[in-house]
Image (cartoon, rainbow, N blue to C red; front, top):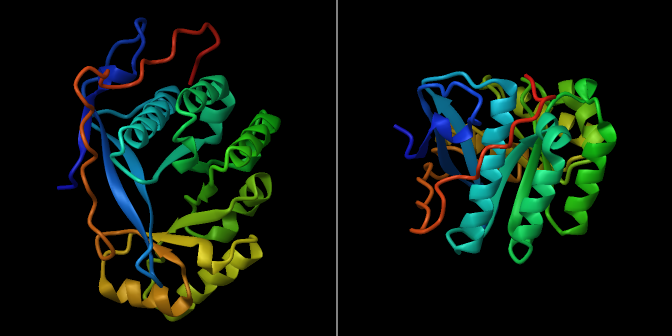
Length: 251
C-alpha cells in the first residue's frame, strides 16, 4: 500500500455541495537523476479513493496540493516540491494561485510546477501563457506532465507551454526501440533527454533501459519508494479552504 497522507472528501466541497464519501490522498515520489546522486524534487502526487471527483473538484484538489506543497517548503519538510496544475485549474483559479504564491514568496522559488492538459481545449490560452511567464519571473521551473501514451501526441501542449522539462510514464514495451523513440520525440518537442523524467520505473531492467537511452531523471519504486508527506504542524488548518461558491462554477 502506498504510504499517504489523507483528507476527507469534504475538504474540497463548498457549503452548497453534497459531500462525497471518500478521501483525497497524497504521497511523495522522489525524483532522482539517473546519472548522478542528485535528488531534484519530491513530487506531491494526489489521487482520490472512494469517489470520482468532478472537474471542478479536481481543480480544488490541485489547489489543496499547491497549498500543501508550499506549506511543506515553509516548514522545511522538503528542499523542493513539485505539484501539478491543469490548464483548467489555471484558467479558472489563476488569481487564487497567484495569491498562494505571493503568500509564500520566501520559499516559492523552491517549488516546481508541472502543467497538464490538452492545448486544443484551451479557452483562455493567454491566462496560461501569462501564468508560465509569471512562474519564470519567480524562478519557478515549469514542466509539462504528459498523459498520452506517446510524447509526440502532445506536441501542441509543448508549443503552448515551452516547458523546461517533461514527465512521462515509462514505455510499456521492453524493446530498446521504444525508449529510443521516447528520447527522439522529446528532442522534437524541444526537450533534451537530460531534462526528461520517466515515471513508473518499477524494475531495475527499466532503470537500465532508461539509463542506456540517456534519460536524465527517473521516478518509481525502482528508483526510490514513495514516502508519506509529513503531517501538518499543530495549529495549522488541515487543508486549504474550498473555493467560495460561484454562480458560474460548473463542471
